[in-house]
Image 1 (spheres, rainbow, N blue to C red):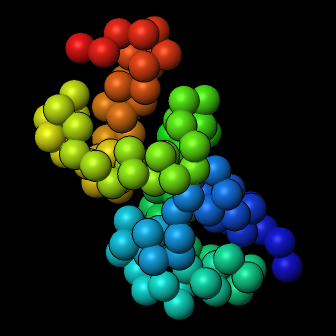
Image 2 (cartoon, rainbow, N blue to C red):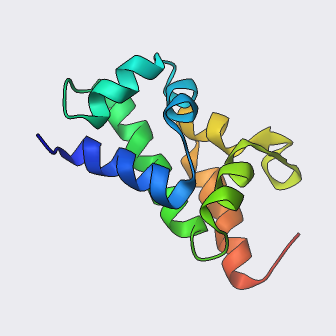
Length: 112
């Protein structure tokens, strides 16, 4: 059974270079749980669905600049423009707008 969550998880793997364990760590569940969601078995909580959707949006935006492997590294790296925090932590903390602001600066060519 294909669900929206299944498709989003596939996109995160394809375009974001994220593995099941990456996604599991980001949303604080087991890799087995992510595997079940990937196969259409079970559904994450609404909060987790929101985090996953935000993550996909960020990955979509980053794909204009980076390969999947580079995107994965970007998400896991600390960034000075994010107060030396990692994008994945901000996304999980409902602070996706801060990450998107940095991406918008990338799009504008402003690397402050």
